[in-house]
Length: 247
Image (cartoon, rainbow, N blue to C red; front, side, top):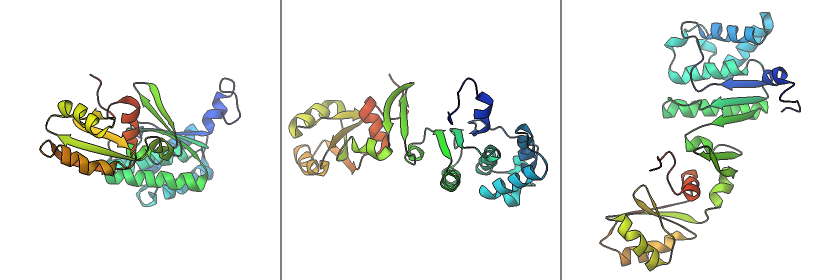
């Protein structure tokens, strides 16, 4: 890692890494700058060098004007930015984040990832993150999808979605288990039952809409047609929806 031996050079490797944990690691009774100061001491930083890095990283994450605020007075989204500023103090070449946006509202989550993406581009930093939000996974250059600890897909998100090919047609019917084989036989397609909906993955799936409605006018309640998503990749690989419990 970084051209060094993982067993012999563990301390040197850690110095090149920044970590944002899933659970908060801030002292909420301390001010923002005080949290960063103590983190800097753990890295052996002090004096003007440390204060300069704190000023730099607070500006990077947009918290310069909140440096004297107690952490407990900040919103969840701003606290995650403080966590990120802490992880940047040692100028890491690799940033590791464990579900960093868990518990944030959609707006705060979007702001956090925009900040991180800007840093990644400007600093040339590698970011390794875990997430249960597929819209976040879609931002990756390279994505590994795990299911129950087992690798099910690896590659660029666009490449993984392209493996499905064409479009994804989802059909809501009155009795999906009864209708699924009928639709498969009538339209000569492969069908999946996912979350109570009949799903068809096929090139130019829009051509199936008219014959589907003509053949089963009383059974079809609604239709949705779209391009493949990472959710569809997961379904394609596992036969079930993302985060859906196995029976």
